[in-house]
Length: 620
Ligand code: FEO
Ligand code: CA
Ligand code: CA
Image (cartoon, rainbow, N blue to C red; front, side, top):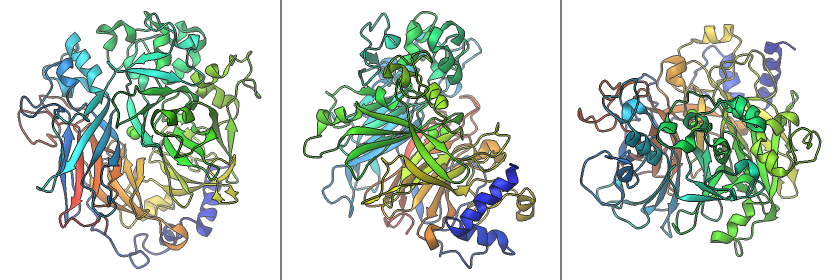
């Protein structure tokens, strides 16, 4: 099978289905002919890379919470002084966002609620001045441990027309690598492979880290996804026995990106080898009740979790989609055994739903079929001889189990968005190591990513996400907006249904739906891959047979990616995280000073609220 042939095959499927607009413009004299496109709901912004956040005319953004925003009092220095101070302030590198409204009529006007914010990572040379190759001090490393995790922020829309954190609200809260203790549920609870000297019973894990994307549950909790955990642990996979293969696949090494092991021996696996197995999970947090301990739900598997997108199937079963964001890793689905009953499953009682169910992984075929294959100890290749003595082994080594049952390797699967009409969108950021086309990855090379659309088999009441059969297709391809049409078609690439060159998506990463069902996509890698700004795009999915046309809504400052897009129920505010602005530069010589533009401050990762100047619905 030659790669172009397969792409043509998929393009033929597009021509009947999702990409009518894109293919038509590919075949026409001008790909970007506006005549067949719906009217613009906003004037696209330029893809040009700048030091600032660029929005369409008529839109403004303000900072809701930046690294260091105090949760307990106003005033004082803008940045945390030490770990204890950081524990009372918003963390670093904001990512996934969830908004829980307090308003009874939120779909008309949303004015208050809880904004939940993941904090994915830290940065040595942008968090502190004067960092040398000798590295950080012990206290600086502990400050970093306090700067990851999650923030729960009590926010309100003020009379000044801005969203602000309510200082000193008892609802404000921080979780980090320093705590609180998380309980463990499911098959890995009490498992010997999670036992450490500090927790011989393997049921209580201090803190959470590497919190990338996530999800929310129908019962009002947050699921936060632990992703790139290997950056924080020092260890030689070869010394880890039965954990070696998975640890190596994570990229664990004796020279991690962050040298936390110098400040806390639990991050040194030569001291505490099981500690690594206690991360890489989906963690449930009850944002409304700080007395409820977070829970690491091991039934959902352990890998580099990007997200935890949750829907209720027609049967009432809870379905959680999660992706393993690494080149050639997999797409997972978990289905609860029990059906969700809103009358019974409230508060702490609801979390039992995520303890017992079936974890599956996606197997895709060239013809467009997708099958969810269960990962169950003792079934098929998951035998004791293969190292799967119990289901705890399966969830701890989910990657290895997935490969054994025939999971399809994908191109950095990231966020998953489920549309009310049942379509499941999967963002695949890129894969610069791909050498040939394959199911789910129709391009022979994939430096710019794509978005898959999965349609579940029909049940008696519509598409059933709990069914094991589905189909897959490509919704859109990312591309290089610098290429002109001739170069792109000479390269055999097609199906980029953009409104203009600015509208060409590069490296799709996170996504969300607005209240009217349009898909908004953020990118990670546009600057790195093509030199244009990373940003936010809108896709109107309501065209002929769901055709998607992408339009660039925002361009983020240099170094940054936009993450965690989240609309308020009234559609008038789009919260988004501006993560790692200035990445790759230093405190002394930053490539941007977003958002403060203060020569005394480094760039700060920040959650911003994007609003229309006239207060109207975003995107018209
Ligand atoms: Fe943390 Fe896969 O992005
Ligand atoms: Ca991400
Ligand atoms: Ca990313």
